[in-house]
Image (cartoon, rainbow, N blue to C red; front, side, top):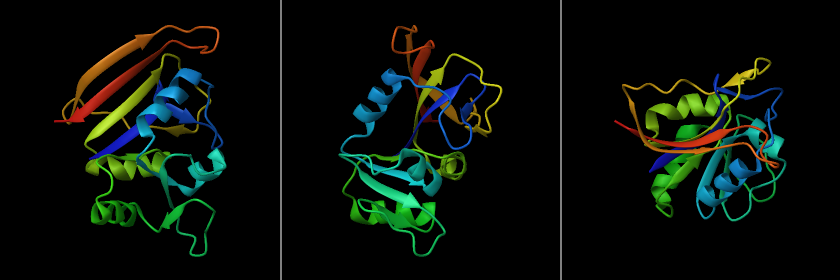
Length: 164
């Protein structure tokens, strides 16, 4: 199964200058719990913004840079190559696409499930957005709302969509 996991604002904003627009520990904990033990696939810019391979996960980084390498990651030249590698090895029952925007856009046709954290705020100054989720192609399966608190400055919701 191929899944996307993403946090996006109410206006689908996901970042600015290759950085997140918020710090939400509850979402980071959800991300870690959901993806631990699985393969994660991300673009090079997303990997560089994180700064290191994420522990307890197989990290595949997509880049067109021929000589790109970093300790603890596998490099693929395309999303298709990364997915083919996962399919061939069949080690993982769920592979996660974790960003960025271009990789999310490319992955939508192949994706079976979307884990979406909605940050209940609009961020006007964003420069990167998650593609819209079509009601015709996706069915909302789970919703879990949370209010802001001392650690999480915005109300947020965990949503899970499955492909229709």
